[in-house]
Image 1 (cartoon, rainbow, N blue to C red):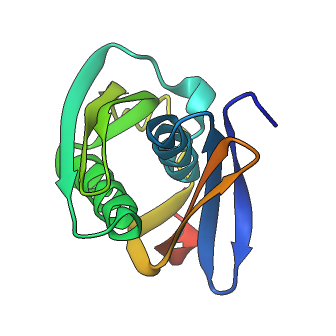
Image 2 (tube, helix red, strand yellow):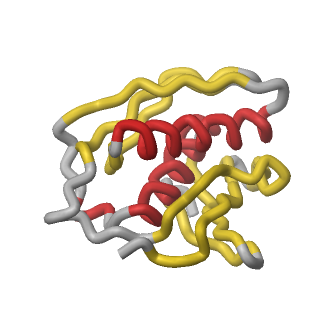
Length: 146
């Protein structure tokens, strides 16, 4: 498991996403891609625009939840969906990066779940065998929005 990636994980009534990579920033990026894949089918999104995102928190786990909440905010307020994520800073208390994608186009994008927010109590960071893992639970409406 050295190639970066993400997967959906069981989280009871909510939805979990786990991302992994060789750095914490890349793991944050992978879990963010997984969260956006809950919203829309990623293969339908083109990287024609970008949005800058920044989050701060007191612990790395709270930072992950705050980062995901900021990305959900960009989606909700701007109608933006991402297909690529790059974190330029990912410390214990600060995350800064860029989402690449495009505005939501209901004629082209197949909608998935309606994600409301990250569940801070569902944020977890692990380091296993040199691989960073980031797991987040997101609250959704529990239904597809399509």
